[in-house]
Image 1 (cartoon, one colour):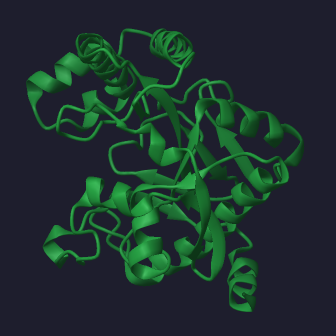
Image 2 (cartoon, rainbow, N blue to C red):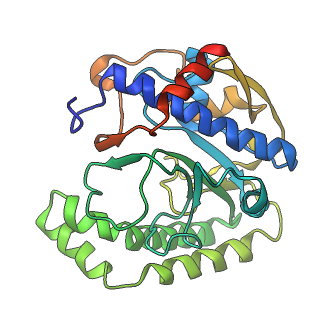
Image 3 (tube, rainbow, N blue to C red):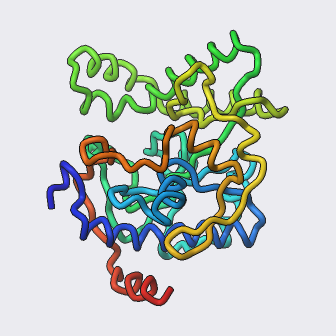
Length: 286
């Protein structure tokens, strides 16, 4: 298996089965506790265009507004199957350096290329992106975007000083790595509290790149209502305005890209759960 390039199709299919099981756990907890979430990004695109996973995709993207994520994190204390899963963010893993959360499968491994040296807990994961408001006043929005950019680069520095191709960039990241990750997390929390007091036109995940075009976020109205959508024969939640969202993010989203245009995240380590065969049999039952 050429991990450095892309997971081969057989490995991807096995990974998809485990990810589907993990997504079902998120859905179960959210429905039980009346928590709003949505499939987004490539996962939503896959649901609409392929009826499930994009064949070459190797992850799952879920979105929650911050207040919904806080409810989800609290619900996981009692409702998450902790024998199998681990909810990872800066409060549960002191070595974690991303500004969004991950649900990890415990008895597995999945490590991106360039992240082998990081100390955070590993495991097959689902990304849970946390949404926060973006200031409406354009000059403040510019400052807000730049501030978020710097905080994101501080968190990325542990990866950047190893994996960046440029000698200068690697050394800039090496300097940024001196700044503790807690510096970024505390200031991100302050930003969220300041601008989440009232509804704004745009929202974004503060430590993830925003769409081009000067908006610095996605329309908040897209996330006000959700609906069920079919994904690999199961029902999950997504935004009702998914067509407008997908067109904004991908353009002609129903057009399947050529092989050379397809994007994925290279992995250096993949180990499936010990009881993978059980997931395979359960999947075949649906």
